[in-house]
Amino acid sequence: MADTITIRTDAETEHALDVLTHDGSSRSAAIRLAVLEAAQRRERAAAMRRAVLRMPLGEPDGVDVAAEISRDREGER
Image (tube, rainbow, N blue to C red):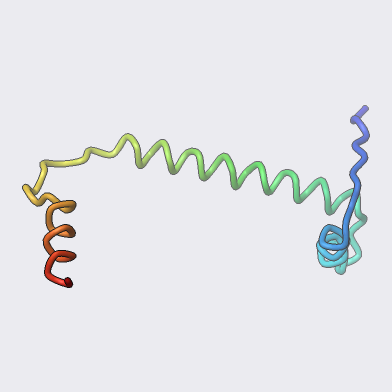
């Protein structure tokens, strides 16, 4: 048997539930689907971050970005 979860809603949450149940879905089904979709989004985002961190950086191009910005700002004075 599944556990029961109780939530306290506010106006923003009630509006979101109204949107999610507009098609006739029950509040329970809408909340369950929203939780599952949120977890999938977080898992995908974490996987993308890991993939980016594993990407090779390549060779440095020799440009010191901080020095370039500093020179540009000195010229603005």
